[in-house]
Length: 326
Image 1 (cartoon, rainbow, N blue to C red):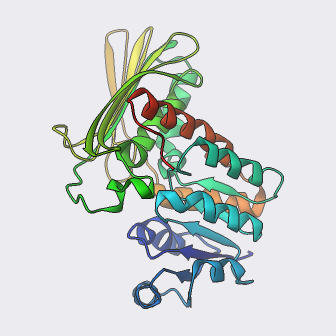
Image 2 (image 1 turned 135 degrees about the horizontal axis):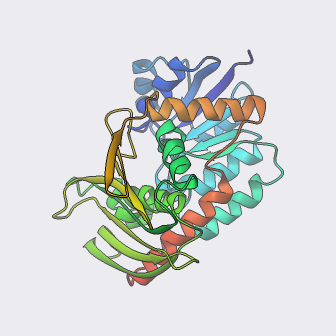
């Protein structure tokens, strides 16, 4: 088996759970190299997580001929720049969500990815867990009838207001962080690409949303609602609901179903609860990434899909009276 050697751009807090630990569970994957803005911090991080090579900057990772692919967990504002540079360097890319700062940047990356022969994947890890395959299968099989409404939410408390996720210059905001999951999931469960009808933001500072709600409409008239927050009265919510003509689906914790989740299917006066077994979502994602690199396996979250997610995010910001990021 050909080993896929991965370089990490940035000593991000998410990297151990998102790439380093999953690499230990997926055959033929090696996290080979890492760089950070502070070389001492990079060296400490690499030593802590047994990453053998430390580079002095991100460009050196891309120039390393031993590196086959890169994982990009940098601040949102840097995603497009470094994904484009990775493509130019001939590296496969697993880029954290949101894919870019806005739809225009996402389109530029998608255009560069097209025809490159490289795997460019947005890291919506939940999409690779068997739970989502089960939910989409139930909807496709008519378990609840034609879909008429979709509601998704990701809310959690982040009172660390100095965190980069509250920085406008780094393309932060609740919609970019928590809300990108809710927007992406709504798109997966809905009946086409949604149009934003209205949106309301609660601000932490000028231009930075700490919470957001948005109403949407699908091409066939079905409706949708996205709710997200990093600081609001709604401290915790991780759910999705799909209402059809003959029933409904409810998912508790679609984001990390391997920790705990509950799928409830209600139709014609009866309800049942399901659990869908699966590996941790990040492990599922890395397996899919490896299969795509080695064997042209299916990428469920390609750059082209990210363009559509970022367009909805841009439109929600505009509807809320805010400027898109970037």
